[in-house]
Image (tube, rainbow, N blue to C red):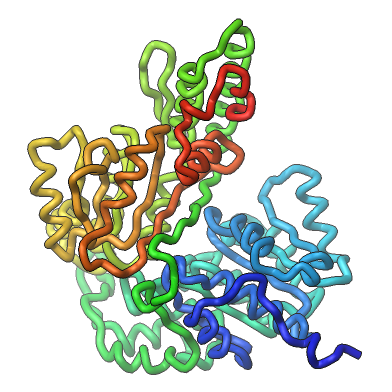
Length: 501
């Protein structure tokens, strides 16, 4: 028999005040929404919640569905936050679509493990074929699970295959959680599928169309030879907020008085198959070239590292100086990240090519959103254009106007800049999020750019996110920058293998 004392969960790291409140709010709830802003610790809260329920024998398994750039980071968080006496007997497996045999075997073994189990799966896998879905069903049927959808706006579309699959398997889990910093990024209607996943009685509607008829103002317009209904406004949103309030815990970053002033995190980006092939080939040729030299300088190594890093970002400079585009998931991952954030953000790009690509992608994304909301095409395009400011060497005659617009216009919520141009002498405290789309070896540029969101009297924390392709030179670059190390000073002629291999 387990003693009452053993039933108490002891977290590895102390919890902040708002995290303790979140745990208390969902202590006896089978279905609950953690609507906690980015970097307020919703992952830790979920791990602690599951750990406590595991000790109480209410659950024996945890399944996490998350976007491709997020789900693998859960393994790091589990390692950091789960107590050792639980971690040592827990099998943690990561579903990797098309993975190697060892990775597939690791997943298969979790189905027969007799102790606690944790399965991490990219939710996109549910959209392609039945293999991932069938495995998820087998896993959930094999125990008493807590099923978590992280960044739950990923299931906001009630018609998407991933949403339908998530709702389908939800019936197999006695405990369910959704995690999101911003559950309604563009429309109150985004909330329906997320809470439908938790419990259909929470909103008390038979289907999405009944829900939409209650809270959306519709208009029928002609499109070609047919007529379609579009959303032109919303009503009774306060009533919707009252319905979800009892089943959720909401906290903003500015409400968390006891968190650090800077919160660092990563956004993992999966390399495309073409990217990986080219990266491996370039790395092999780079290491062969360096190994063949009698003496290798730090400069030579840094050049090779930056070439590999450019490839991670989606472009490659050949020996003749020609730039070639390479398929990448980086832009889509960035857009997904920004969609989860409410407020102004600065996207730092170290390469001019990235500035142009990122700014255009963000404008196109905002324009498409506005058109879906029923905004006339020409007006949507103009509002989309105005939503993004730029500050780099390519717009020296316009960047002061862009800077002013970012600071004063609520509709301009994205600044895309290079650290070399915008990293000094600028004050953009309106931004609470800094995303490093790409980095170089310049420590001064990194330090200066991190301070642009600071200002006199600014007390709220700032979130710093580095986009990263794991298993590449990006890990070394970002690690040295975060540790305030100068790459040229840490690379010597005989340690280049530590950086490239």
